[in-house]
Length: 63
Image 1 (cartoon, rainbow, N blue to C red):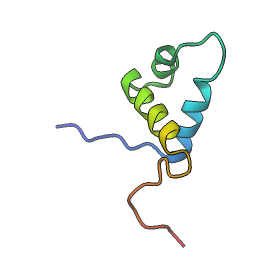
Image 2 (cartoon, one colour; image 1 turned 180 degrees about the horizontal axis):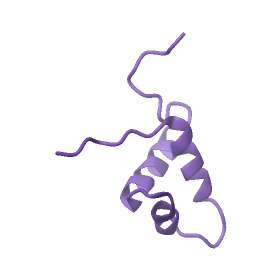
Image 3 (tube, rainbow, N blue to C red; image 1 turned 90 degrees about the vertical axis):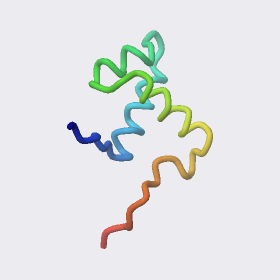
């Protein structure tokens, strides 16, 4: 059984920023960075719907 991969909020934000480049599809970016295109689309949708709270995580902050 495989474990789920966890991506940092910074990685998600950088991946989303790449989608705003002209002439490049969201699918191609996802394949280039090694993730499922549906996952990148979901991250982008989450970021657009709640930009200030996107990818806040469920853990506690470190000191």
